[in-house]
Image (cartoon, rainbow, N blue to C red; front, side):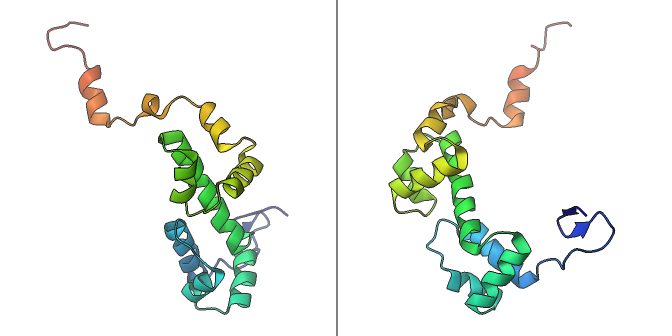
Length: 148
């Protein structure tokens, strides 16, 4: 039996979807990842005891609250490395981490490259600057007097 999300291919429900309280805690992590979040704060957002919250969160989302938080931080760090020219230390602080060494180790474990090498493997942020679609359309239109 293969489960995707909460529904299984056999037509049965594998487990109940996460309660809205767990979703509240996950939303807290997703929006406040750069802050110093503790499991106690996450549990308070879910209105559960710390132990019950940790078990319920892990059962619902497949990873511990701390691992989920670290994953969000590393995803955001990768986006900042891709889209900005911030230094590795600035990215580390921007995503709520304190130690550049620990950040580098975690990043390399997840992405296979150090943050500096990850950035070096990509084009410069200025080359990928986001341009609004209306500007692209304006400058990619043929001149008014040209005929196609």
